[in-house]
Length: 208
Image 1: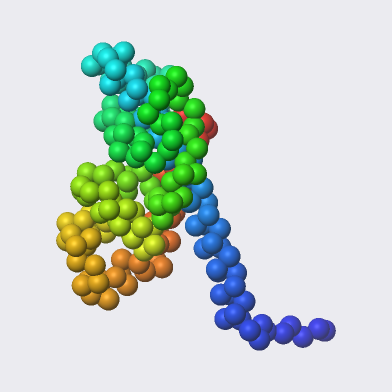
Image 2 (image 1 turned 180 degrees about the vertical axis):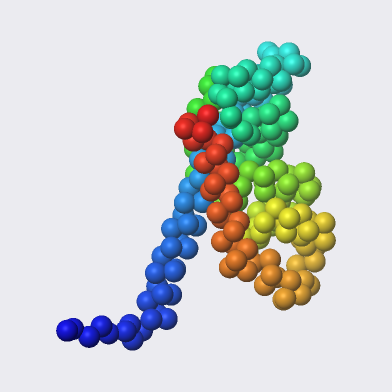
C-alpha cells in the first residue's frame, strides 16, 4: 500500500494559494467598483446636463427614481437621494475627463481611464467617494483620502473616523497600532467581500 506523504513545504503552499485567492478577490472587487463608478458617473452626467440647464423640472429626479423602482422591482441604489449624489459625483470630478462638460445625450457608460492618474480612484466604492466628497473640501484632501482608503482597505466607518480626525493635516502623527488596525488583512478581506456583494445585488439583472 502506498504511503501518503505529507506536504514538506505546507506553509509555503498555503501562502501561495492564499495570495492567489486574495488577489483574485481584490481584482473582482476592483472590477466591480470600476463598472459601478462608470455607471454612476454616466448617470450623474446625464442628470446634470438635463437638470442644470432647465430641461427637466424640479420633480424630475423623484419621478425617474419612482419609475425605475416600478419597472425594475428590487433595484437598489437609485433612490432620489442617490441619483442626486451621482450628479454630485459627476460634477465634482468632470474636470478630469475631456469632454465631460459637453452636452450628454445618453447615459452610456463613461470611460474612466483618465482617473488612473488618481491613485486608488477606481478601487474604492461609490459610498467611499461620497463620504470623501462631503467630508473633505479641497481636491488635495479628497485625493489623499481616496489613496489611503484604497491602500489600507478602510471600511466606511474607518474612513469617517479618519476624516473626523483630520488625518490629512496630521499625516504621520497617527499611532502605528491604529494604522495596523485600520489596514488589517481581516478588515481588507471583509471590506472587499462587502463591496463585491453589494454591487452584485444592485446591478445583477437576476436580482431585479
